[in-house]
Length: 86
Image (cartoon, rainbow, N blue to C red; front, top):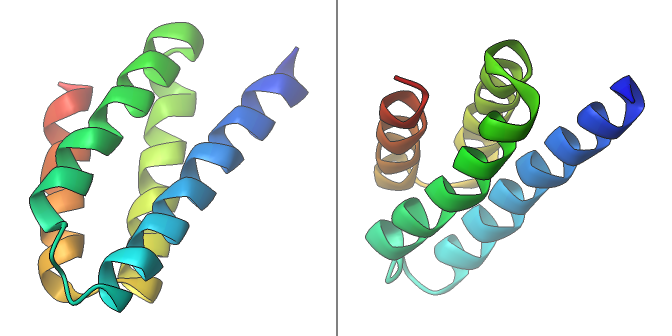
């Protein structure tokens, strides 16, 4: 069961990376839409797994967004991830 939580968290974090690259390629047209849209899978994941796994996935998602996204995208995503966990 623990492997299932890790794989789901990795898939969500990789989805953040794909959306960060897509957002950068489109000229940051979808900054706010992607930020709001990604809060939904993270909320479902945190509801299913618990706070510890959700925080680890949030940190991994922020690091991936920082590596592949623009600064505005990282700020929007970080804001949504932090407020969703509270």
